[in-house]
Amino acid sequence: MSAVPERVGAAIRPMREHDLSRISEIEARAYDFPWSQGIFADCLRAGYCCWTLVAGGQVAGYGILSVGADEAHLLNLCIDPDYRRRGLARRLLNHLLRLAREHYATICFLEVRPSNPGAIALYAGEGFRQVAVRRNYYPAREGREDAVVMTLQLPAAEGG
Image (cartoon, rainbow, N blue to C red; front, side, top):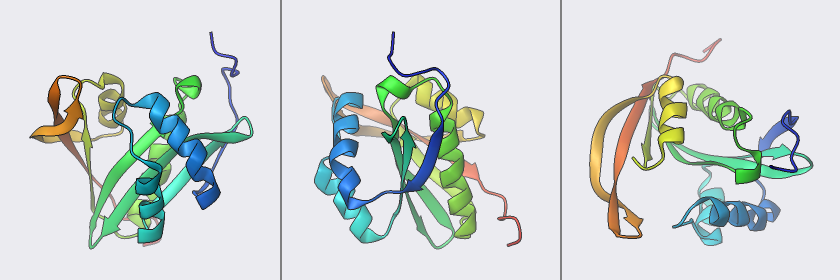
């Protein structure tokens, strides 16, 4: 049983350099092959859409989106394991998709491990559809794991 209340108030704000140690901690707890703190710093420096979800007074999740021309690519979306199953990932995903539309993206791409059915269900629930498989995309304990490639057609931003 988690010490985190079931109903968690949360705010979404831009990621900051001082968030990176906490983000790296969450990443290491969530994944067998985590991104390094340097990769997150590079994403900030590159000007990607880097956002944090703050709950219970601390960073509880984060998302990174790149946008170029009319395409968005969801690079990373993660919620601290102690804060999962409260709708926070969906909330953060929808925030990032709104940003993609505001940047005039008409489609969003992502890759997800087939061994992550929770993430696949989240993305499918928001309208993403599988369009391809990238063979041997991810490192895995037993060699490599494929990636499921999913896309979502984005409607124009309101007022856009």
